[in-house]
Image 1: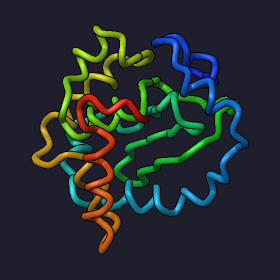
Image 2 (image 1 turned 90 degrees about the vertical axis):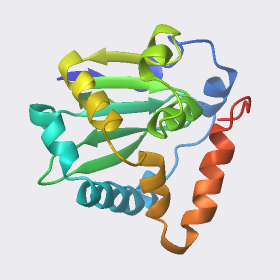
Image 3 (image 1 turned 90 degrees about the horizontal axis):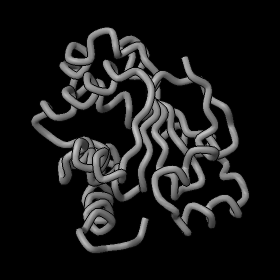
Length: 179
């Protein structure tokens, strides 16, 4: 496993003034996010058990997801017995097998199926390092889903699912320059 501090890599994709701003913010109380992240990952795992079969041995890998223009990053371990999605403040070293980094908007567009991960990688809007077999397995598993992860995430908010989906759509709207 690789240990990496995402803050040290976040400027390697492109210079990002918003990313510099997030380093000035105080650490977020990520423990507040944890129940929501647990609910999201368990709900998605329950709705899409086929993801684990497609991931194969890669479901035991740890995927560090770094939306580098936000003050936090996420660690996903898609273990079928105990799926986990944890938030961490920048500056924390976290063991991982795969590192995936881009702007929050880029990552949202990717999980909503609105953009091609290969094109993002070759255009340097997405940085991916680590276990290439696990990266390919994750990409193939997500590409073969009938729904999008963004839709599933929004649905986790129950009666607020429609406003959350509208917010996601607003963020990922082409041409919009925020997150």
